[in-house]
Image (tube, rainbow, N blue to C red; front, side, top):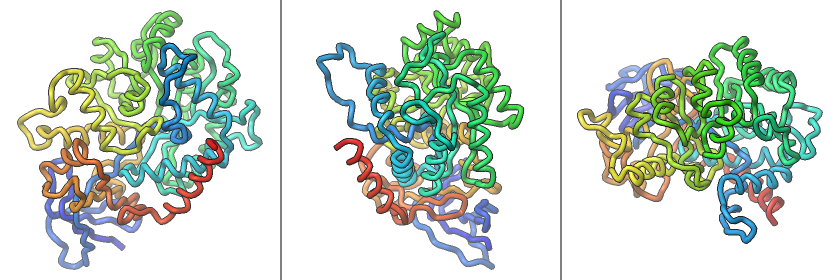
Length: 464
């Protein structure tokens, strides 16, 4: 039976409807969007601002349990960078059990839902036991994250990661043994195992992640991409690229080109690819990457906390580039804080306000709406699920902002996204719907206490 929701202010690609009437079928698909109440159906009143559910295109779920554990200076570290942080990550991951991995995943996915994310791309590379031996169930760790996603209710793009080398031409190190597949057939067998298990689960999709050009050589990349596309020509591919200057130097020396340059010359970059970070790119790479139709995955809070650098977003945008956001190491799982960090980083670097906004249209002249629209489109292109718009035929993924939240009081459709994204310290996300089902209502998830308590106990096990 179709349900009709009367929403005080309903976001649409071409503007807001105040009110708007959203018709949602029994199978969670939007059937119609109207400006008038139907005369033959009862409506369900939803006060506030109704927006499409957001996509988080890059997550390492287990790293949520590391947040706040690396923020100190050490006498043994002269120059604290991404590379010193990575050493802590290697040490930490060796202690995780499958049960703890699942518990952390469920908690971070719960946090994402309460922020307004309805789908997440999980860049999953913890495949094996701590000593590198294979679990009897080869997809044990992936299964744990799938169980975590199912428990929370978030939709998941599972991206098992191929990770084969410690650097170009270098064998993997002992601390990488939980991640590594040196045999592409074994890795593809893992992917096939995951695909078989989620075949009838509409909330889970899979893809392929290449850890980086440092960790996967050209032959391995080519073999895996060709095999995956043979089964699914629309499969998603994600790769870490150009996050660090040292990485660029190694790729130039080993492959004869900068990382993004190499990808542009040697892979068929298209709308199915997402390049995570891409922080340090040349002007030429910026222009060519923008024209490739692929997505750049930006992780503003993680990139800021690790001291990665600032992506040339304004130039990329002016060249027509597509981008979305991920929460990566989960220093925050808050949509507004990620987008605020991104925008404010650009303002600091350019010494200019409203860096992506442009005059001439109500859809482009406000920074909040501009940030939301661009990241919404890029995120959903990256992870899929045919959502990201509250329009007929799309999956009914809806978030409702509370118009009585302190950061939104007095704001109407013109400025509500400015207020949410660029001001305030509260979370106004009140309700979250995925595929027609209410997952969060009144700011509360039905399993919130249970998931949180298990997470609390796991953190005590890991850190006491």
